Image (cartoon, rainbow, N blue to C red):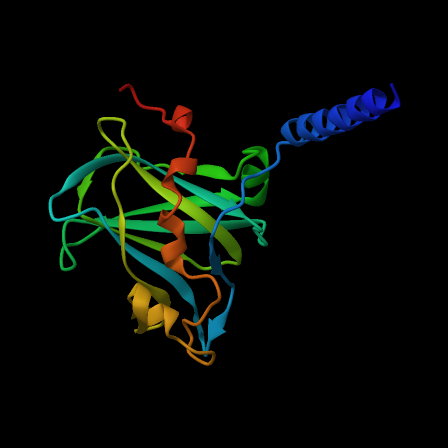
Amino acid sequence: MKKIVKLLCVVLSLLTIACCSVACGEKEEYSYWQTQAKQAGESRMVYTAELSFGTSNINLVECWINISNFKAQSTNITVRLSTSTTATPKTIQTSVTSQQVKDSKDGWVKLDFGSEVSCKIAVVEIVDEMRVNEIVFVKADGKLANITFTKGGVKAGSSANLYTKAELEALVEGNLAYSEHYAFNIIDEQDKFPLSKIQISK
């Protein structure tokens, strides 16, 4: 009888922990891109990730970014969408506040495009300290776009320290772009995005 009582106590304890985790909105763990609020001389460092959607233009309507450990009260996150590296990009700059991230419960914040955009390339730029856990782009058909990481690093003034994934992994401390958590981490867990957040008619 005592064994049965002990077993029931263990089961009830586990259920209590599980319920508490759900009720408290426990967040998922991500690999992430760590950005900072830093200066390089007189220029503010711009943490940059260059992403590709493939060889053909695709039509995008939404972008969602997952953020945590956001240190500033507010910041501007910039996404530049273009059809080639030489084409003039469409620049989407979204003001994001720490309260907005907190209110989201799960860290997902929408970067509003305003209208459908045709592109092959996306460049994400951030100038404040945060963890960028993941970013997803939604196509006009309501499905997530396939993304590959091209280059990442930092820009400061007219200089750019941007590297491929292999080059980033080989960097050593002292390089402006050195980090323990690089930009290529923001596209490796696309399945964690709740598709129910998509706001277009599919």
